[in-house]
Image 1 (cartoon, helix red, strand yellow):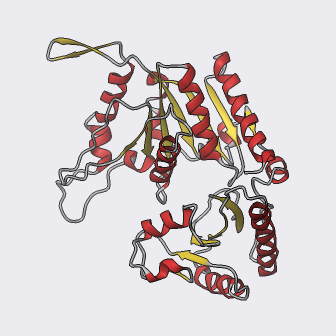
Image 2 (cartoon, rainbow, N blue to C red):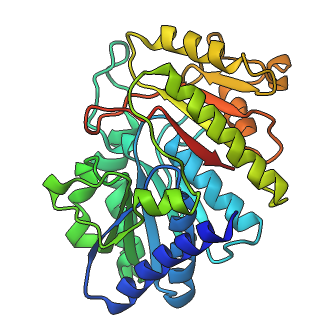
Length: 353
């Protein structure tokens, strides 16, 4: 990564650490544009805090859409396994895969990643009414609160026997904090020592005023992200392709070991298929670019690509893993996503692997 980008990310993390050390603000808001390395900065921040505060654990909550929880968890594991952030020991809170249902939360980690979909209200099943949802098992049975109690209490009583509790302080990281996660808010003042709100678009209506911010201008200047173009003027896509190739060439010329790609998001469902066809047509006029279109979660039938992975019978998850890998030869990733903020959508941004 270019030194300007590294310096900008380090500055933001250091500002968060200064606020944390002062202990004066218990509800911190961090704003950074999409594509600026928010997950990396989050991991770096947690790693530094865990170095200084041995009695802290993090609960990282993510949105339900897509595989955001799994993606965050995988990145944290990658940072840990590579020896980059050695203080992080991540755990993904998810349903058991043994067919019994239920959710078991281990107590020997220090970063816990939770998908907010596991906290949603129950939906009645059309088939078996006796089937309990994961939300029922996590909330109604008290599994989540019992875990909070175990992690935060200094003493645990079980079957009239006194056991040593973990005695931890929980720091809650709300990824995409502009979205409500009401069922976790119920536990906030009772179990969470501090809250760190991460978002590209924090909500002013919720009084989410940034304490630390990377502005769009700073991110663009440091080449963390490029200019975001809104609308559906496809002449703009050619501008984005030109700029992407310029950036990729700069990284390659400097031999920085960076594998970059362009992400194109389609948010209009009604016009989505036509937009995708138009986008692919424009991309394929440039014979040196490989593209991948991911239709949706698990949808291998409608997903397509001109890259080498098309010859392999892979699942969509494998496609995503390949696209994010440093060895990927996919230059452009196209996918649908409904964006709710501000009535606009992000058409393209540079993504650094």
